[in-house]
Length: 406
Image: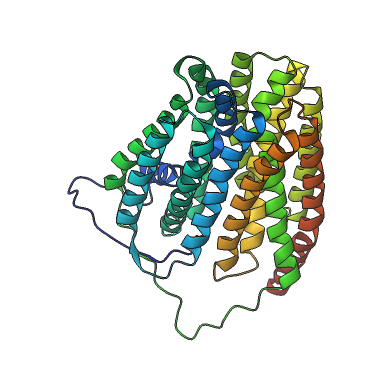
């Protein structure tokens, strides 16, 4: 899986020990490298809530900041897909991380939401490109699946820590705490960078190998649309989940603890992907998982009951971690050249950006969050409709291949 950036191996000036390129510690460092570009997504509820509390921003304005960050990321990822020049990946990652540190530092100095919208859009541009670098390097490992699995573990694990502690810290330290946390993450990643192996490009395909068949346009588009709808529906709720709980009378400290625990439990969803794999095809896991997600979304309507709010976050967290690998893998399965995988990343980021943006427009300056739940459920139902055809087509093709081989 690659975001399409053509990157060259580049030894660093650091002459110390390097991690085994396909070992455990390398997988962790590569997970940090990729997560540094999008860690704000994992703590988005804390950012939205922190802007409301720390800057006195209205809920819709706070949502616009998060959406600007993610729209910038989508543009940065798209730029990475179509990057024409050959870049030394280590230098590209170093420059991107330094820029992220600087932008987060500038963000921490702001006292108004208005300039933050533009500043965070710039952060997204750089972060989106860094994600492309990270995905490309991960694709050069012997087992990319393991590295992507570690990526999910790092995102959910550290995202849980952020959601547990950051909302409370904003109460005492102000909004700057949010961006200082992001700065710290990028600095830690910079320290790890020299210990990564060079990761040269893998050999090209054998000359004369038959070209891959054309990508079927309608199923491929529906697969991409399913990714967009799934990410948009989930992120619309996630961005405002803290405010939803508070509006229903739940206490901030309890909400933070609940969200962090739900993030850690969600790691099991990613583990389940490897346990189930393609054993039951794609359609059954997708349809069952989306049905369970709808149940989780329904539980949010009773967020005035703490147990329901907790269960809603656990269920939707588990299914999010379980379903997104299937949805992205479904896109990649239509194209052996990697363009669909890259486009699925772009559609994913557009969904992550559009969810909070549409939610912000719906909420306005009010504190009524049920309309967001209505929209999220509609998006997930449409996602199931869109995913059905490509999943059935791929399952039939897989069954046909198995029948031919036997």
